[in-house]
Length: 111
Image 1: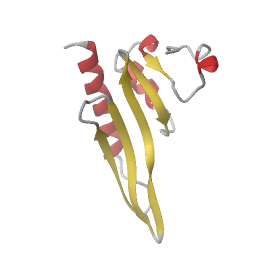
Image 2 (image 1 turned 90 degrees about the horizontal axis):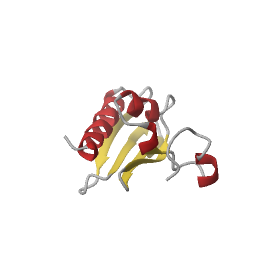
Image 3 (image 1 turned 60 degrees about the horizontal axis):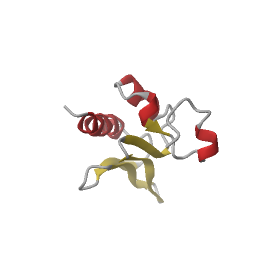
Image 4 (image 1 turned 60 degrees about the vertical axis):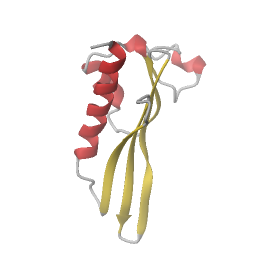
């Protein structure tokens, strides 16, 4: 399997793991959304906790320039550790939620 196809599979499986965890409060579901070109991956919450609307992105990842760009990571323990544990090299993960001048100090890819 090509690395990009493998990374797509790893991303989708990792996000699905989190989507399958029950939401702690209210009637909220968590969905994995994958773009048609399979290069954008989202984990979102949607539902109600009593009279409070719950709707928001938990994770946004993108495959760009043969790297996984993490644009937003709202997972408490971070999906980055899951990706590394699944075999994605650190130099192929960009923590895009950090500014470029901070990325060089993260131990991950700069861009």
